[in-house]
Length: 383
Image 1: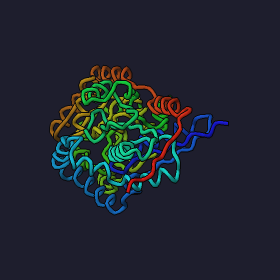
Image 2 (image 1 turned 90 degrees about the horizontal axis):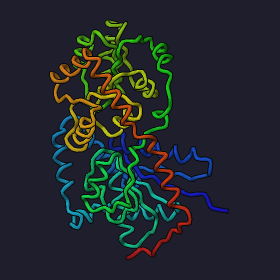
Image 3 (image 1 turned 60 degrees about the vertical axis):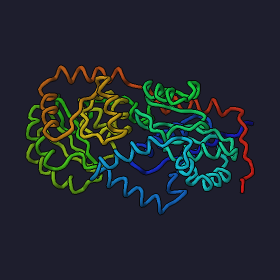
Image 4 (image 1 turned 135 degrees about the horizontal axis):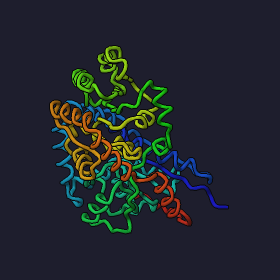
């Protein structure tokens, strides 16, 4: 009798993209009819909890208050040569603890949704300390050099453009699968748009979903201005974990009861996307992939230099998004979309055509195919 496969998914809490991709994959594995063991682990928390806490705080503060500093750091680390001493040290960060964990749990496959864990796996494989299959899921529509390692067995990417970039970096074509970026199953389900609109008290006017969250994408004054000029549309503001923003803009719902709804943290964001004709958001890989899966066009605001800038370019080139870099431009773009139903309809048509399919299912199929009959080998740890 064949032993049930064991899957280890390594992620991290630097933004929601890495973690949500891991969650989507875990659910896809668990929904299979055959028994599969799946463990999702925060890599940085496992190998260095104190460093994880410090660097997460720095990341969140930098993204929110000093995005240009983050952009400079992103570009600098992207230029680290793969053979440099710095790169070798980065790859070894936590690798020994990871090896101990792998030895104790015995996974058949390690799936990385975070670049540092993929580097650690590459180092272990390069040292012949393990033969466990290492797969990497790139969670943006671009490729940072920290994702790319010779010892990675499989890359799962969001677009043909990302595949071509990997090819340019020397990755063999046989290692790359274009699957899309994994999102939770609820974003692939059919939704009764009419019923949801009725439940939310919405009518047939165009509906725009505004998503800010802790990143500080939209402040209270921006939201007030959007509500003031968006007289022909319905607005759904989702504040996420930003309680201060929620309380600041909640009066907008009372001021414009026929066209404004204000939410804090929600667990049904897929339903709000289902009733929306456009989403105003940041250009993170997770949110934009969820929107693509739902076939909803986007107005992207102030993308962070680095991966978000690249995500924005990818989406704009495909005609499913437009961009605003500052508040004045945001109001201009927003007003234009509110008054131009034909452009909104065209963007929605393109977004529906750009649906990537269920990335999680594609990745699970590929991983399970490559684990059949594979024997995992561990070597002795070198002193």
